[in-house]
Image (tube, rainbow, N blue to C red; front, top):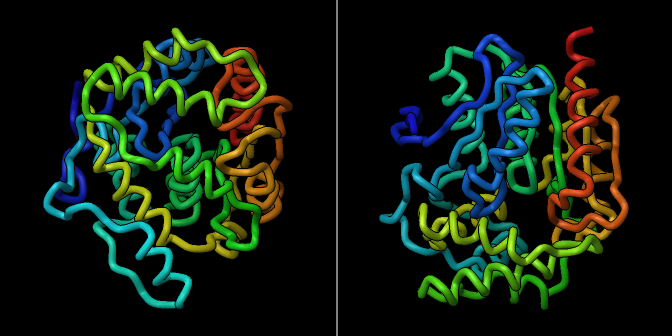
Length: 294
């Protein structure tokens, strides 16, 4: 697969469809590789008239790793932030947003529709207000504003999800499948499909250290709500009613912050993409991007 050379690092990416179609950039969440945007989903979007671009964020997959930065102590970071101290981290979500723009530059794309999930939704939001001239529309899925007053996941869930993964292949894959169930929501959880994706991800690149540095970037980003008010492109906010990791109030706050944003709350959906709701999500994305053409 090709690489984009941006911000003095390499970003792995690939594309689907006709470059003359409407460009749609997909931004993945915390620790997720671009293959979490499945080929099946990308092809569905191609059939809706998009030129689909997906990529590995820095520190995951086949993009540049920040090994020399070491492992951050998230507890210390959050404690320092609570005390009002300025915290230095390896990189920021703004850096990651600039990486995404660098991928568009590599492809000579001036403007694109931007869609991000979870941390990817945060990055997509930042792209929209940091690089407004490059954005046709915004879709923020199961994400939030960073508003500290919003409901947070339980301490128990955070401890489960952020506990060190086993390094051994089979144990790591099975633990990943188990953790996926914790945040999936009320739809039937297909363990075989979840295991298949975990196997692909492990064999492509198992690198949990990068997830912790990405988490540190989220921690220091703070409250984006006031900045979101400057976004003036068609915006769609999608959230699962049963999301335990980023409670639905995060989606509501995002839609409230962005002028004219449409909010789609999906019953039964957690922090996940159940196949049962994929057609509804695709339809909503298509409808939102169409507003940019009017």
